[in-house]
Length: 620
Image (cartoon, rainbow, N blue to C red; front, top):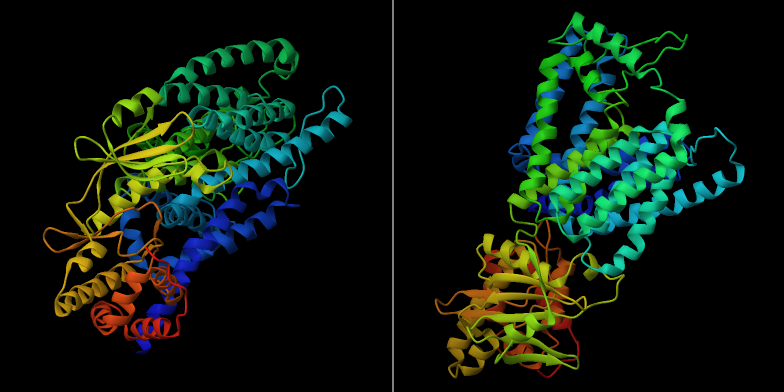
C-alpha cells in the first residue's frame, strides 16, 4: 500500500513538472531577457523552472533517458561534454571543479527538459514559441520607439531588460527575426502573414539598429536555408525580398557597415590560431582563459568565432563531436521536414551558425544570449527528432484540397453526420471516410494544432499502444481554413449498437464487464478521451474494442488521476442509454471489469462517483 501511494505521488509530481513547470520555464527562457533587469535573475528562473525540475523528473523516472541516449545529437553532445570535462585535467584550475561542472549539467538538462516538453506537451510547443515571439515583438517595438527619440549619429541600439550590449542584443533580435521569417514560410493560413511579415520587419530593424553586421549575414543564411528546405512559391518571393533588402541595406547603411572595418577580427583570429597551434589536438582545456590584444591596448576575452573557441579550449578532438551534432541536426531536419517545427528549429540553428562565424567563442556557458545561437535550437531539433521517430508528432504531409478537389472526392458520398454548415462526416464511394473540421476562431488552439492533425497523431499513438484505431490515409487543408482527415474505418459496430442488439442480460453483462476492463486499460495508460461514450467505442470483428472520433483525446505521462477518471465517467453519464446499461443495470459487472486492471482506490472512486452522481442524462 505504501509503495502504491509513493508511485501515485511520484506520478503526480512527474506529471506536474512535465505538463506545467517545464512549459513555463521554457517560455521564460526564450523571452525573459526582454523584461528582466539582469542576467542573474534569468539564470535563476532557468534553474528553478526548467533545469532543476528536469533533474527531479529524471530521478523520478530514469527510463525517460532511454530515448535520449538513442539520439545521435544527444550522444555527440555527451561525448563533447565528457571531453570538455576531461580537459580540466590538463587545463588551469583557477575555479573549483564543481563550478565547471554546473554549466555542462545545465546544458544537458536543457536537452533533457526540451525532450520531456515535446514528448508530453507537444501541442503547446507552437503556442509557447509564438507567445515568446510576441513578447519579444512588443518589447522590441518599445525599444525602437525609445531609440528613435534619443538617436544621434553613431549610436547603436542596445534595448532594455537584461540587454547591456548591442552585439549580444543583436543575437536575440536576429533569433526572433529568423523565427518570424520561418513562420512566414510555413504558416498554413495567409492571415498569419499579416502579423509575421510586419513582425519580421520590426525585428530586422532592431538588428540594423544594433549596428552589428554578422546577424545580417546570419539572417541571409537563414533565408537561403528556408528556400532550400521548404521550396514553394513563397521561396521566390523570399529571394526577391532578400535581394531588395540587401540593396536597401547597402544603400542606406553602407557607411555604417564599412566605416568600422573588420573590428579587429582578423588580428584576433591570427593570434588565436597561433595559440591553437600550441595544442591543436587536445586544446588548452575547458578551464583555460583567453586574452587577446589585437594591438589597441584592449584585451578581448573571446576569439569571436565559435569554431575557433572550440579548437582553443578542446582542440580537434573536441571539434569533431561539435561539428557532428550540428551536421546531424541539420540533416535530421532536412529528412523530417514534413514537421514544420523542425523547419523553424533548423532555421534558428542556421542563424546561430551564421552569427557564430564572427562572434562568441565560449564552448559551454550558463544560460545567456549565446544559447540562442546553438544550444536552444539544437535541443529543440533533438527533441523533435526523437518524438518524430517515435511517431508522437505528425509524420505525413498535409495536402491542399481545393473546392473542386473536395467536390470530386465527395462525389456520390453518403453523408453520415452534418450540422448547420453542411456535412461533417462522409462515407466515400470506396468505403473510406472523410471527416471535416470547421475553421475555428484564429486565437484558439486549433489554429496551431488543427483537429485533423490531432486525429492523425492520436490514432498513431493509440495503435502503438495496441489500441485499434482508424488508419489515416491523407490529411487536407481547405481554402476556407477548415481541415479534413481521410481514413479507413475499423470493421465493426459501435458498442451502443451491439448492446442494443443483445437480448440476453447475461451476454450484455459479460460485454459490459469487458468494457470496464478496456476503460481501465485506457485510464492506466494515461489516455484521457474526453468524448468517451458507447458511440465512440467499436466492437471489432474479433471481439476486441477500438476507438473512433479521436481528435478530442490526450495522452498523459502517467495513469490518469482520480479527478480525470471522474470527468470521464460524468461524460458517459450524460447519455440515457449508456447510463442505464453501464451505471444501473450492469454496474457491478462494470466495476468487476475495471478492477482487473485498475487499483482498488480507483475502483472505489468510480463506485462513489456513480452513486453520488446526479448529472442530468441526455437522450441519444
